[in-house]
Length: 140
Image 1: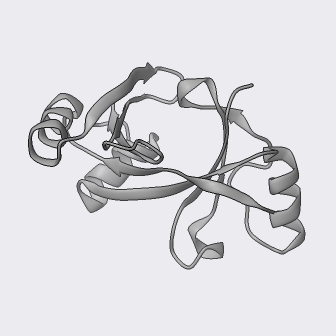
Image 2: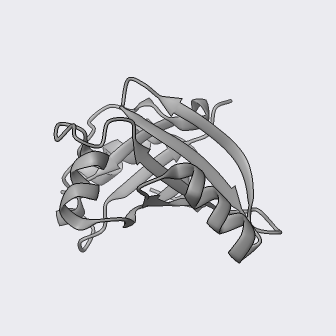
């Protein structure tokens, strides 16, 4: 598998609007994308710096009490903070096939729709030295 670049770093927050304000005022970042993924039960916002190659993805659960939602569960058990690292790949299906063949534990055996209309799939932290890894294929 060949990585194109770091796409984003996901950070779980308690309040996405306050987090956007914080990143804008204190770190000089700007909001480039915001959406509610109702099927996944989360709100997401993407922030970038001046150059804008990689982004920070802010994640807030729509329902903070839904312990079936991975982001709500993360927030409840660990508090706000770093959630995942996302890398951009050219062909997500091939990347999943390659990583599975190398023995990595896949959370998603098939890609699914993600934020910004991209395809995404997750690799279990047990296979990536404790880091939840997201593969991202840009929409074409």
